[in-house]
Length: 62
Image (cartoon, rainbow, N blue to C red; front, side, top):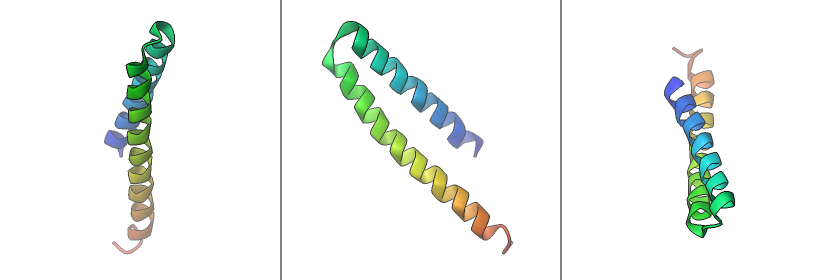
């Protein structure tokens, strides 16, 4: 869980840095990176939710 939280924090920071660089320099590849990273962030959130649900469902069984 700690690893997923760290990855989430790093993902948010990376998206913010890419978006800020895109706004400052107006170069489109920074916006492309931010969009690509945000798609990966959605996947990361889905994995986090699945792990959280599995933990809640399987904890009473074990």
